[in-house]
Length: 255
Image (cartoon, rainbow, N blue to C red; front, side, top):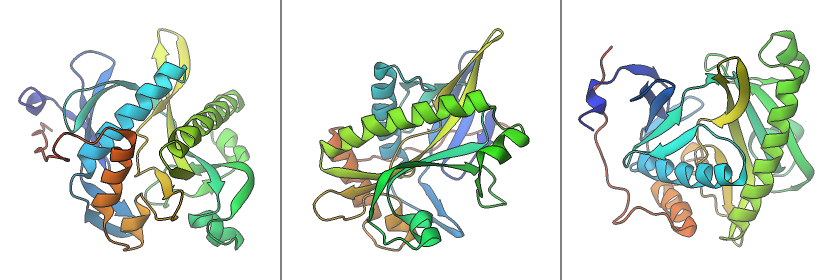
């Protein structure tokens, strides 16, 4: 933590902070306890510690599977080393069960199993509240090419197959999730890899028996026991930090 206090802050979002990494082409991703859902803001105690561990676990599994991610290794309770990528300004959402905006938008009862997995694209813009966009929008405005979209779609569906089975094995239903992608450059060669995080902040996770929500919807919908839900996901995956999610102060930054 002392060495990180001397590193320059690159970016701060609602849930994470990025600092310059220890070597070229790397960044340090710091997980905060801050929570945001539309206009709602708050804190989920220990969320950063748990999301760091959960995302580390899932990204490592994907890397082992041959699905490339930006994750390199976890540094401490709240930080991980990641590859620096050029973020594609899109959120790719994979839906297996009707919930959230899909249920509202199409008038489908929440919890309805979809005929097949549906992939949607959203433009990353906090001032615009991440509007849904089509492939036509994406290619017309140059956010991604047709080939980029094909690669992202294929990766998203592969991740969906893997995560659905993984969570099912621990009694959790993967309702939907969002992924972010980045372009990783190596000289003149470029490949698209998964970036950001995969955690209860970015996934809808329901208990397979009770349909109890085990994700950020508990915060969004004022259901209570938010910290306990995140801890339960980590516990079922077998990665709850020893002694629970201990807190660590964030590194000091230089502007």
